[in-house]
Image (tube, rainbow, N blue to C red):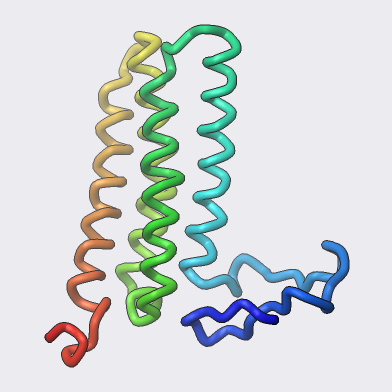
Length: 159
């Protein structure tokens, strides 16, 4: 039994094959597709968001709720959906817009989250930090949207 994917990569067998993690082939970051990179980053944001949620619940302090929500929605949810879109439409994944989207999103979101934290804790000069990170994330979404319009469908599929 194998898992089939729309991408051209070979499917990993579910039975047989590697019996432990040491037997799995290592894949270098540079060899990963944009969909795989986004999914791996999304999982890290999910772990961060869950960790923040647990910390807030344990301390009964919801001050950082805004950071928690942005990390979960923009880091986990949005990035997983975008990874699935890149997997479904490989033409999108191979464009310059995909690379710009990936880097703008992953550089902007941590800056935006740090800025939101600074605002919530009334630290000085917080607004420009939030603005810079937010502009980068907004630009990443614009790259993704343009990529969808230009590359998601072939002319025959769009009709």
